[in-house]
Length: 405
Ligand code: FEO
Image (cartoon, rainbow, N blue to C red; front, side, top):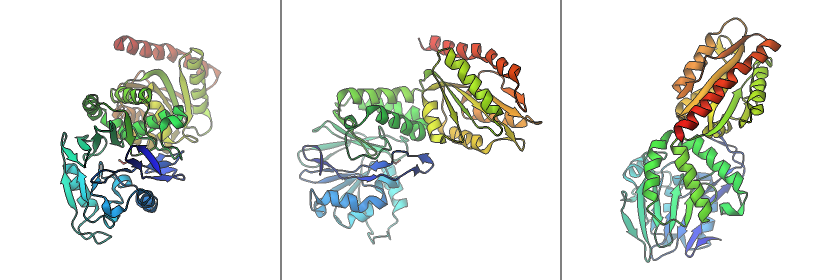
């Protein structure tokens, strides 16, 4: 039994083996968090992904007879959180489903009246920002957080406990037998929170900022997200909220990330020389080969980097498919206030580089210079000549520093 606070229990499910969450590599598995609030009207905050039902039910039964649950709060319809509402209602058929207006609409599309478990009519209680629900000695308050990261999202706040049930916000894909972030390596948890933001929330920075403003008016001692570990230490809450504000504002470090793929090591030679030049200039730099690195890990580095150097050889007049995949992904994530430089090796046609440049621009990057492209195998003079780009890279970093200060 995992007690989070007096009368509040974690009733979630851990997936130790998850390695892919619709295209996002989850190296550390994931956790789907559900929380049971024991009060005069016992309330379940979110459920878990379908296959976690038995684990969730067993955890609930360890605390209460499930038939006594009066409310199921659905902060978000995506099926990793709401996938078991219908099945749960078989155990507590009188419970009301509390959700946002869009939540009701979305849930009805996911669970049509003739549902898989025969439940025909759900009792919806639709709430808006500022609405409250008395569940006994506690009063829950709801805040709609549209597009963080679906139109239906909301968070639930218990003022009696100073706990924010934040759903996807502040979450991390991380499997653990511990429940609190401070019980495991914080560097890993903050890294996974960054990966989560970069790959899930990044397109919605404009929507995140007003949510952070609204939440800043609340006293929050504990953040209970719906993925990963719970934030309970003041310094950790301050840091993760501050990071969300920074990420949502598209602020970056003076850091460069070099991403490349290669066929016969020519583009790789260029990438490695760029790495050497930038590293020797004492500029933080990361280098990633797309043959070995998942695009969701590349995005985690892009989240904190001001400049992306991106290199591909040409295959059949095009950039390599791995690079096209990354760029298509980035077009959806829409990073802002970031710069890029393209490079690569070609044999006889350069048209694919134009496509690379155009795709980067469409993804929101500002190109800092014309691309650097070398025919077949770059010789030592070609490799040496790459150093002419270093002043441009430095200038971009300094210029943005000046603008920020
Ligand atoms: Fe974790 Fe948007 O679901």
